[in-house]
Image (cartoon, rainbow, N blue to C red; front, side):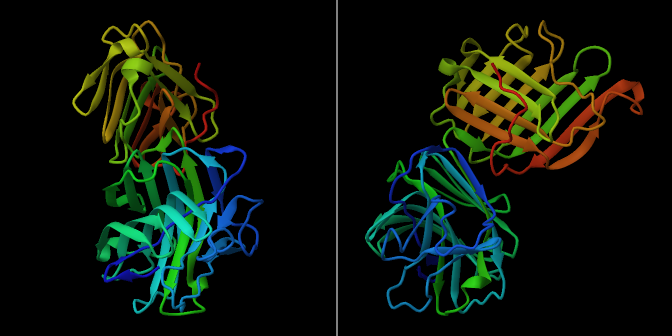
Length: 401
């Protein structure tokens, strides 16, 4: 759809249906389809909504079929995932954008909590202009139902909003908070509680030209929903000795998407799961019982000075941050050991009630060594920082009890 100045938008949709509850869906668009279906996974703005356009896919690329010269503006291409999705949703996609032209409007869009039916489109949309100049912009929009009926919730423009070929865009909704990212960097955040349910999806808009739809689109798409909330990792430190217990383990995440809405470990307790996410078998589960949690400003704190319940000594969960510290000298041993020559990557999952927060390191790994030779003293160390949020929660080699 079209925007004004630095403000334009478009929206999303779902119309119906499907049998299963969807937790994650990932595709690189391997099959050529017009309109895109992927065995009934997608419904389109034209086929279901009538007034908008569909998506089509070629091998490795999904593009919108919006005409670009339609007299009725805001006829964005729309593709929504079918199935039943939980309200908290995350979509991350890699983009193609070539032959950029600031004199026309090309936009790539992520849909959240959206629905589409005949002549009606509702939900939220994060849109990213296919521009890498100072004329670039990012907006978050709410679609209000009838054709061309939408509300611009917020928008920003400038070089910091630039989009390049191969970049990753992401949009999340948690509670009423909607956040847009480019390459893992937050660009825009708003709050709106109009829609509580709907499906994730993708969109595209073109105005001022025709026949250039293949210049921009999506080369990969991953959606997750429900309790799973991928978060960035600030740092993870593990130190182990060949003889004796694991010395320590510290995890820190600082991510503005992290919200304690719907989480109450004073009632549900929590479980922390640390595991090798590169195909190894090392894993450790830590129980953080509700009795050791208390409310604190902005969230919750955990303390177990004697390590009676588990090796976790302290933890905190607040809006924007999560951390915990593990000590290996208590009555319960830490089962995660640095026995391999290197770890590759390590996943961290915290579960409380139905909510799952996850990170994957990654990021900048400054040390990754095992407990055997040639390490002096037989001490293994894993230190990683600044891990971007994973597209979906990593899968551990086992389940916590």
